[in-house]
Length: 222
Image 1: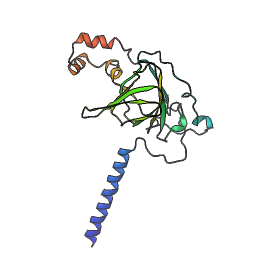
Image 2: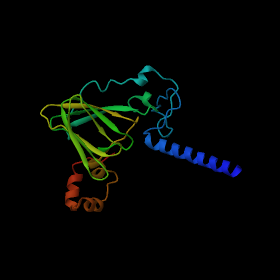
Image 3: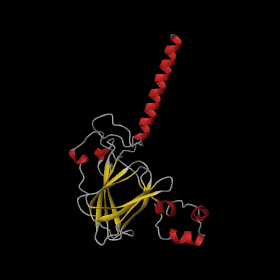
Image 4: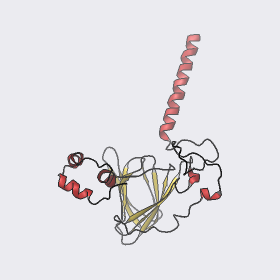
């Protein structure tokens, strides 16, 4: 019986460890352990997230930056206005955030990924062609319009493009307080220090001249 009891105990412990491991994988951010933990954005302490500040107010949970359309006179004809923990300190530990994306006619939110979150977009106005690419290199794309929703799975490369003749806008929701964004073109061609030319020429099967031409289009990160 003792041996059987020890075997049962070991099995239960393994099940608990496996459950904890799987739970950590499927959640984007760590679970909160108190009512609120308003981010102390000025703290020099580095943690996985932000440390909590002592004195909080209602302003820590408020942001008006998504109310108005963003200026789309950019290179890509689009502008992302984020409402994450860096703009709303009260989002710290809550595991959610929003963005507003505005597109001029022909505007593009270029291929990018969010390494820490799944994204859901709700179309405020206009029409967009959207899509994501799976790790099997399969494109799933669709045209969406006002009032419709599309989902981009966590970590997968995706894009949105306004092929209409009028401006468009969406609200994006994320299951992370700070989902992170990696724009594929900028990441590869404007990294600092730069990605070596021989890596890019081999990866894209082009010459150094073409790589340098593309690099010249992007301002280096600072």
